Length: 104
Image 1 (cartoon, one colour):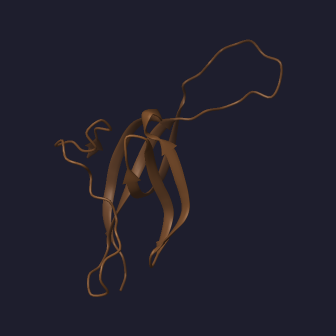
Image 2: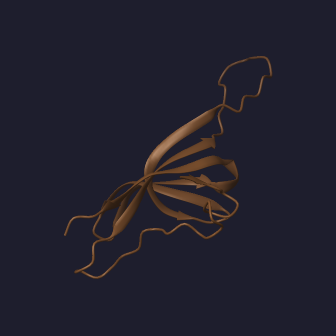
C-alpha cells in the first residue's frame, strides 16, 4: 500500500496511527518505508550541483500531519524509541510494510 501524503491514505482517509490502549487489547503498529529528500552539506570547496537523491527510512509510524511525518525505531509500553521527525513536504512516498501487534 502506498500512502498519498496529501490525503494520508490511498482511499482519502487519514492513516491510523498507534495509540496507547487498554491492557486487554493489543496495540497495532504499522511498519513503514518512508522515502524522503534529506538536507545535506558539502564541507569543502566544490562546484554547485544540488542533488535531490532520496533517502529511505524504515520504522514504526507514530503520526503523520501536514507538517511532520514521525517514525520510531522501537516501542515499549507507552514509550517510543529513537523518534524521527521528517518534514512531510520532503516525503516522496510512505509504504506500509505490515501491521504488527505488540506482545501482552
